[in-house]
Amino acid sequence: MITQLRATAGIYAELMGSKIYLDPGPGALVKSNARKIPINKLDAILISHCHIDHSNDAGALIEAMTSGLREKRGILAGSVSALDSPDKPVSTYHQNSIDKRIVLKPDEQFNIGKLKVTTTPTEHTDKTGIGFIFHAENTISYLSDTNYSKKIAKKHTSSDIIILNCLYLKWDNSKADSYPQKHMDVEDAKKFIKDINPELAIIQHFGMGIIKHGPWKVAEDIQDSTGVRTVAARDNQIIKLGSKAGNLKAWTKKIS
Image (cartoon, rainbow, N blue to C red):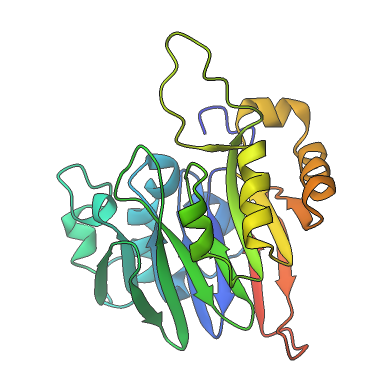
């Protein structure tokens, strides 16, 4: 995030007729405008947890979604830490400017138009963090920032596509000042993929170790180990997803 060797803008998706922005970190506004993403027509902004690489530009996107706060519209849905804590990154001023505000815990459901969304637990330094499952033509899971957990993996076993925030090349807990791991490494990603067995795995949210090693090499290694097609996300990447009926009704634009 600090170096911006990789953008931290988050993910824009169009699913079942709804325009959704997921985890708008630093650069979301600038990158969206550069890519002509229709943030003025967003239906929902989702925030998995309060850390600024996932929430920093939420206020700016709310202003875009509401025509500069002049039109009360759209959904803002996020974790307790993101929307309802003393240190929440989205101001009360901005939260009061949208049509529907939803504070979420794991294992809850809500709708964005015709799209059903389920929340899932995470294991992270933000203890109220959540993942999301989007029940569209394809079932898409975003696990968010989390350590590996078989219990978490079970929540996602019905998913066709999973998005994994794989930070570490290899977690090293041998250092004296090491703190408990709260992000997955490559071996954790392999465990998640083997447990869930999706049709496609997308890895992103890379730390410097993976960037220096080569994310595409990591994806190849994971694919060889799991037998599941694995893609290393790139900045500005667009992924088009066909429905199970063969129609291109659902597609995502990967911003970072």
